[in-house]
Image (cartoon, rainbow, N blue to C red; front, side):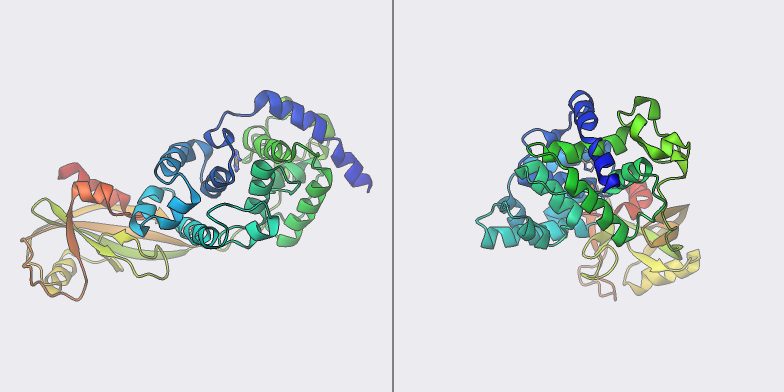
Amino acid sequence: MEQLQELQEITAPLLAWYDGHARVLPWREHPSPYRVWVSEIMLQQTRVEAVKPYFERFIGELPSIRALAEAPEDRLLKLWEGLGYYNRVRNMQKAARILTEEYGGEMPADYDVILSLPGIGSYTAGAIASIAFGMRRPAVDGNVLRVLSRLEKSYEDILKQSVRRKFEKEVQEIIPEGRAGDFNQSLIELGAIVCVPNGAPKCGECPLEKLCRAHAEGVELELPKKTPPAKRKLEDRTVLVLVSDNKAALHKRPEKGLLAGLYELPNLEGRLGREEVLEYVKKQGLSPIRIQELPEAKHIFSHIEWHMAGYMVKVEEPDSKRNGPEDFFFVEKKQMEETYSIPAAFSAYTGYFKERY
Ligand code: ADE
C-alpha cells in the first residue's frame, strides 16, 4: 500500500511532462482503434522512426479494418516487407476478418473482445482500449517495464510474465480518470526518450528524477534485470542469384515455419563450392553459362542466425517445359520490387541482382 501511494505521485508530473514533450507522431493524430492497433503492432519490434513511413503507406492503402480483412495476402506481405516478424500482419488480417464478420468491421469498445483477437496481447489490448477508447486499462511494454523497474528499484526479471502482471496491476491502480491514453503513452514516451536503455538514461531531464529510487542510489544502469535469452542456433546456407536474361529466380517458401509463405532466392543448407552449385543448378533442369562467387552475408533472426555463402549463376533461358524438383519462377527487377515480398535475410543478394539488371 505504501508502495502504491508513492507510485500515485508520478501521475501529475508525468502528465505535465507529456503535455509539453510528447513527440508528434502520425498515429497520435486521430487515434482511431484501427490506427492505434496498426501502429502498436508495427512498433512492437521496430523503432518509431522506421515505423513512420510504413504506417502512412499501410493506412493509405488499407484505410479500414474491412480493407485489411479483404487485402490479398501477397499485397499485405509486401506492405510489411522490411518490418520482419510477418506473423504480426497475418494475425492482424485474421483479427480483421473476425471483426468484419462478427462486429460490422469495427473494433468494439470491449476490452475482453479486443484481448481475445489473434495477435493482441495485454499490452496491445491495453493500448487500444486506453488510447482509442479512453478506458482505464494498463499498457505495459518494454519501455514501461524499464521505467517502473528503475522507479521502484526492482531487481525482478522483467521477462517473467508474473513480473509484468505485477506492474500491470500497479499501473491499473493509478491511471487517472479521463486521461488513460495519455497516461499510458506518457510512461511509454518517458521510456522511449528519457529513461532510455543501454546505459544512457537522461536523468537530468526526467520529471520523475526526485521520485526514482534507482537514481537516488545511483543504480539506474543496473536496471531493469532480464535473464539473457537462449543462444541462437547458427545455420550455414548457400544463396543463389540465378539469372536468366534480365530475370532472377524466386521460390515461394512453404506455408508453415520460418518466413512462411514469403518469396526467397533459391537457397540450400550448408556451404556449397562452385562445382556443387553447378551440379544443383543442372539438377533443376537449368543450363549454367557462368558462375561468380559473391561476398558472404549474415542475417540474424530471433532464434537462428544464417551465415550465407552466395553465388550469381547465369543460366540459359529456361525451357518452358523445365522440369526440376524445385518450383522456381523467373521475375524481372520491377516485379521483384513491387510484387513479391522477399524477407530482409536475402537483401544482400537481391541487391546484387537489382544493381546489375
Ligand atoms: N512505442 C510503442 N508504442 C508507442 C506509442 N504509442 N508511441 C510511441 N512509441 C511507442
